Length: 200
Image 1: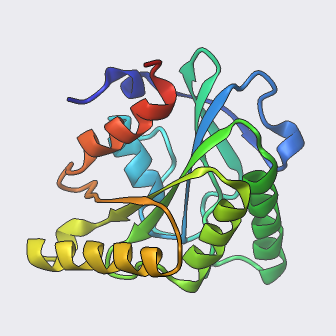
Image 2 (image 1 turned 90 degrees about the vertical axis):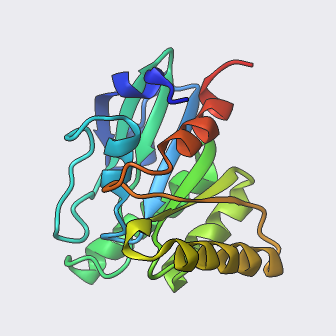
């Protein structure tokens, strides 16, 4: 069953560096992904809000760390997209530096959700992100978006292969299929988020 907690998410603030992140935060779950992987659309679908996270057909639109409040010092965090963004290389390097610093030093971060286009999972940039996540010790969840672009059998095969690749490389993570267009995978995403935001 969906959790309406996420439907009430609201934009709180944006930060260009760690020092600007909310000081009163207790728990954070962050979304990260290669530019144009469907990260903002996934957040909007999970929260059932069309304009919560800004979407764009231009890769690299998310340039700041964006915080969405769930109440009681709990936040969903939208991290800058990475890889092939149509911005100067110097800007990309600055984003990646901030991204790495956030993942390795933000104590409130409990889980990282890596958003990957199911047609191009586990790119070089995804592996870099996974390495940063492993170094920080936070939980890792992989959201294979745009699953509607493949047949059910193809999607399941891709999911299985991604899981196997992670296991071979010693990466502990959970994975799921997701489609913002078809609204599939939302309940699974809510169950994952509940582990960190809902008191047991």
